[in-house]
Length: 367
Image (cartoon, rainbow, N blue to C red; front, side, top):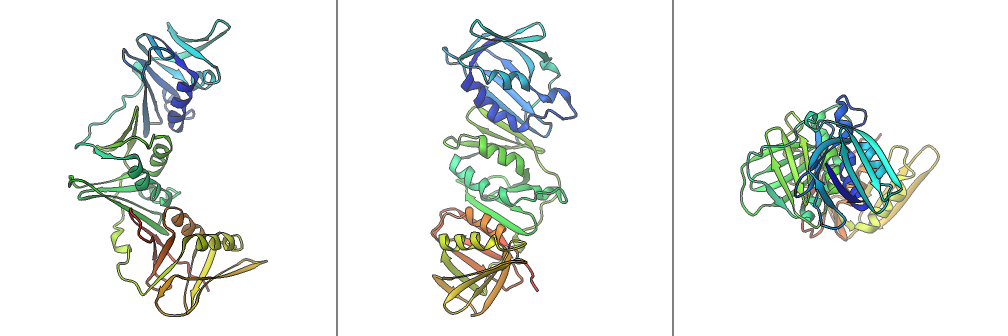
């Protein structure tokens, strides 16, 4: 095996592979990167047993060239060190050692592992792939993945539930908040409901080229996401995802519309004065009043609302952090908060948003 790459090609590949490289895993070979030099491309594979990434580098006849086909598992160190070199870098497998050279003055040597010992990576999708533009994929994932549970108390809640059918829906909840995005499909697909680990989706969102389409292929136990020359594979989370539809209210006692920028800035200011991030909201006939306090300070701000339908004097308390994170996912100059009472979940939505989404927050009980 012998091929030549540039520093840029190595760095780009490592950026995509690094999230799953597992130096402290129970399977030693997974601490490395499987490299296959084929006639038409160089294939790099990294895995942590539950999540895998395959990235192809295509030869261009000049700076990226394949001289001899072959395969081996290289150490992560081999790529990390060589990415610090410059110019054209040549990799050559001599017996069981990898020789890396750059020009005539630099020569490095690394041990390798046998490619045939590397676990097989792949999937057998049950149906045709779902094709999304990079923008639609970003809207679907970025507006839901932030709300997954951060602890393993209920493992299924650490993922985003994907529901395929007449539409494509992504739903996430950590039991204190919920995010749901619905994207129309050109044609109805076979109904499928799977839960994808949030970490995998976060990795994919950061690594994918969102100017290109993303293909989603769902298997019985894993999902594949293809984008350009990169494919992500991930195991699906086991267990039944909670029935969340009943948590989302459809009728409301009060609806409050405010300027998004002014409301967000007010929350950011007052959240710094709350010992637990809790802010109390009250609506009277003229203003929205926001209050927060801690042991040594308290804050108050009033702002005008655009529109309010409901009882004057309505109050509700909530986590400012949860609401601020939800507001980041709303692309609108004005937002509407829909209330069903001081102790029931309320929803947040943008005015005239193109993407159909629901951001739901559970109130905080205060005494």
